[in-house]
Amino acid sequence: MSAASYAWAKIINYLERQLTSTVVSSCFEDTDILEMTDEKVILYTPNEFHQSMIQRRYAPHVEDALKELFNSDAKVVVFGDRERDEYYKKDEAKAATPLDFNPQFSFDNFVVGSSNRIAHGAALAVTNHPGEAYNPLFIYGPPGVGKTHLLYAIANGLRGRNPNANIVYIKGDQFANELITAIQTGKNIEFRSKYREADLFLVDDIQFIAGKEATQEEFFHTFNKLYEDHKQIVLTSDRKPDDMLTLEDRLKSRFLWGLTVDIQPPDYETRMAIIRKRAKSMDLDLDDDVCNYIAINITNNIRQLEGTVKKILAYQELNDMPLDLPNISRAIDDMFKVEGNALPTPSLIISQVCKFYSVDETALRGTQRSKGIAEPRQVAMYLVRKLTNLSLPDIGVQFARDHSTVLYAITKVETELKQGNVTMQNNIRDITANINSLL
Image (cartoon, rainbow, N blue to C red; front, side, top):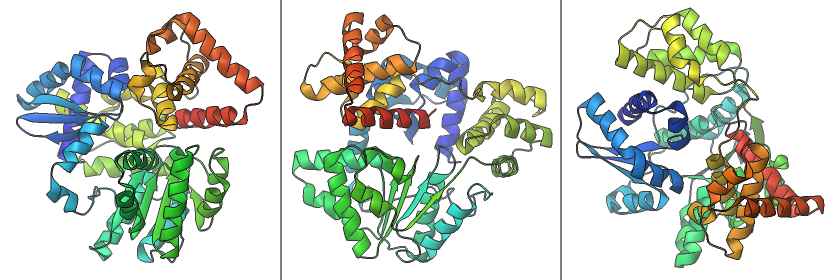
């Protein structure tokens, strides 16, 4: 675990005791440390609403945590996507440096079990024989089961074999957003050159290009160029290509040209191995009964297993108590979710709608009445009503609208669905799948 990640884990632990777990999970769920110095701590969140909320309301609490935990007087700044992009662009030397992948995500640190053995073997094969073994390699499975770990392991493995390899990593929604920016700024040639000259092209969460016509067109030609040049392509998704209802058939076909493998949630033995391996890497000595307690209660998500071990580390540092089962159970019980009881937050739903339609969240929540915003806003209202327990007035608060406007939007979407609007049906289905994959 990097120093920044370790510091952030301790800060989150501190905030949960000062605020509430609900506030922390809703406002800081997608936030991380971009930079940490003696003078300044830069936080990053892709969610504009969270960015504004943290900067206005919670930055002082983070500064208190820095003071209390690290005796630091650093000031907190919160970046969104735009500020983060400018931050990276300001240092031209950084832009010339090969993309850096966390060395912790290696094949040596990947715990192999029955649920991921085939995917692990395929990832090793493309690392040793890029562009030859399986091209493309398509890995799918629910969130938190190790898909991104394998992507980074492939990148680190190839970089070790060929330090000069041009490795390009991107998330599906970022590819779409970069394309929009390139079109707006007239930098289509630079955009295409960036991706079509890659030796290894890694795309995480490819499902987010589904339904975006221009993005799919651009990705189709990028894929063809790389494939024809025998460059390795590796894609991950939360579902297999055939289940992406708004993905073009020609892309589905190409995604199936190579090898498609799934990763399932780890079985009990693999979960125990993961817990022990992560605890050892953090110099934590956990008894078998503690490891068993975690493995029994967290069954679907490797990321949550690792997060639990990190929380135990922070708990030990902050409380200086024995790591026995009674203490551990009190520290981490809030991380256990009863399957089927988790409801998405309005913020999660709205962010996924914005991601799907490539619209700005502030505009969707605001009073803008442009045609490009109307449908996404109506869909967001419909999904918040369908997937949460919020009343119409409560939903209206999320969008600065009254309950009658919310009712009109919901009725309009329901009418479209009942009348057999296939595009609307597929959009709702894909967005709902994206939301469910994050719970």
